View 1 (cartoon, rainbow, N blue to C red):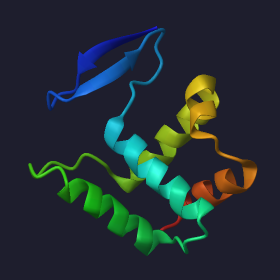
View 2: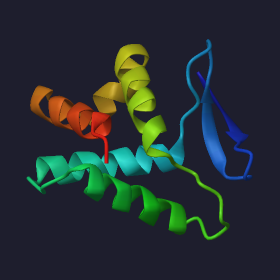
View 3: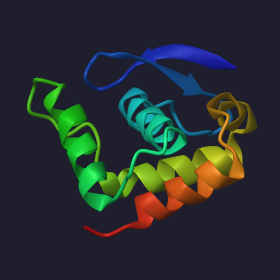
View 4: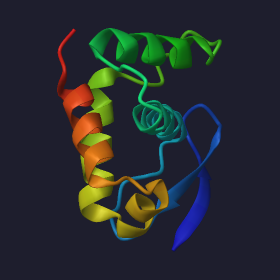
Length: 108
């Protein structure tokens, strides 16, 4: 099960038991925005991804980097491999999955 806890910044999060990764709200938000863009046919590339990450980090208003491009792919792949309920909630089809992995692997 999940137990409420707090991130280091005091924001609530969900910590999953049995050694699973902790839910990461900022990365989750960024990935959902990526899914929406890919599904809508928005042209996405490394430059687009960089802008998205910078926008999300600026929204934090405290100068901390909550997200890094290099952390998005490992988080995405870990959820896909280890958290079937979380993965199912994202409702990612094969085409979207390929596009997201390609985007997250892109170098600027």
